[in-house]
Image (tube, rainbow, N blue to C red; front, top):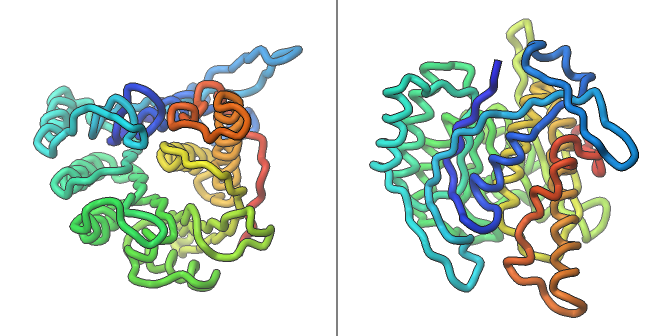
Length: 339
């Protein structure tokens, strides 16, 4: 029994952003043997990885099948001095989806979306998600509602009402930053209590899982950390709902990365799949993957740039392939606190 993801995101020839940041990590995701009882037996094959001095046994492949639709195709991300490429229109997205549907292979367990700048494209995504959910009511839509950061929008303002009124209501998991969460709810976050209330407001809009990926709230571990929050509504066997809320502090890095939000959403998809009712563990795994990839990337970038020189965009491309082992089975390096 395979698990299939439809990922509608950007594509770059060089580097890692959008589908390039999401597909490889989802395809190589594995889960330890101790979780095997949660899944169908034929879902797995044993992985034998030769690592320094021996073999790692007892891990099972849970590679997601990823079908990618590229919302843009660029030579590289737009943080470089130059970039070239093409943008997929809403009509072209519809044509691609119709091709999938005509062959009766439009059956998905997840839909994953990220950055877009066009309202008609975003509305077409919503139409596709709704149709796929009618075919599979258990489908999970994971959405990174990319609107802006640090008090300003970096997409056209007319995307805001589309996200608020059409996208978020059909999403199951969303990963806004503080600015985006405030924009979607109309409520500012100045305290931890505010963050909880904002996540509750987002729950009422539709999603059962909300992760505020970063905030400006003061960290308890010092100013070299960022504070993130998560909240998950869980349906209990008796029909009642309970909510798990967590806080996690993650180390800051003095560099600008591109593609990290796309990687984060993909890893949250993977780890909430493995731990569907344990947001604490899913977030610890997801944030730990991010930490390992970013640390490996920044170390490489500084080595390539040389002493006293700021790394270039090319040197700061995520070290994704080199982080395969950490993506598969990350060492937990930060612990979430249950609120």
